[in-house]
Amino acid sequence: MWFNRKKQPPIRSLIGEGTAVHGELRFTEGLRVDGEVHGDVMAAGDGPSLLVISEKARIHGKVIAGHVIINGEVVGPVRSTELLELQPKARIVGDVNYESLEMHQGATIDGELKYRTSAEEKPTLKLAASNEV
Image (cartoon, rainbow, N blue to C red; front, side, top):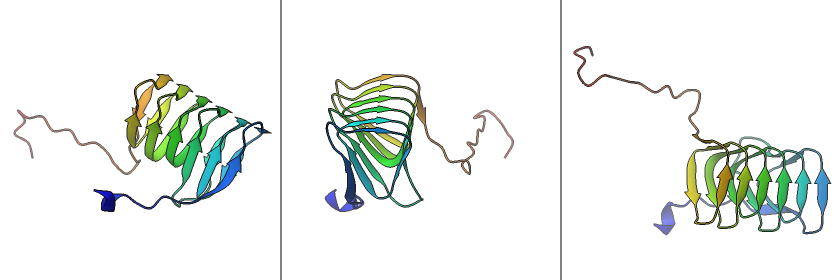
């Protein structure tokens, strides 16, 4: 079981507690937010990314990354292209788009949950009673 997990990218950047950032924030690999961000927080590039939003963190804007771990507050849409982990104190006010979701008791979402499908994936529907192939 432990061998199936992909190695997480390293956290190379930190927005510390007591720090407030105003404007769009783009990062590569890993970012941990303990302070406040008033603007969008997005992973740059197509490589693996990790975003950790700690218990005391507040983000007012869009959040987009591969693996997203939230234990603080996000006011705005959240999009995770790999795994979204909502810890017990997570609070999201906005729509959530995810590939895989892990939600702990106590986490709250005030918005719509949408399973992410890639544009290439087109769902095929076949009627069980249909004789057509």
